[in-house]
Length: 218
Image: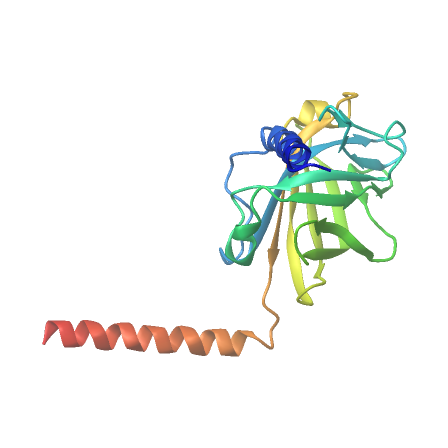
């Protein structure tokens, strides 16, 4: 295949991913520490009757597709520039997600994933970043707003991650054939075993700063 066709293919892929970015929220990413947050955007729809959460794929024209027409049980998204830390360099990379089936708690507006951990539930195609999902609790409040809390492990570092999935158009998420855009932010959380080291680094940095300030004042 000629270089020209390689360039055309790459341009087409980038155009499709840029289209997904248009659906991503401009809101500040979910964050606990402000470090190492993976932020992605895409499109999804939810069936309240079956509990099926369908992440959109893309057809050959770059338009979102859903089950059963795409027949993949997966969807794609894109890493947004809101990502921080080790994920910051992955902005605009393509992401693959696995669709989920959630169970509804009796007489509530809570749907939860109750199966085994999902390996590579989310993976960034251009890197080794992969997230194993263990928790996905989706709720709808009295105003019809949807939000999900998420937890699992980043498989490339074996560090836990926690975050939230937030549909941007709540009125379309469970009612429109085209679903709704979403923001999905997961932060890598240091384990307790690492915290003493991090605290020690912080104390050392603080002492150094104070020493520099004292020397400057002298």
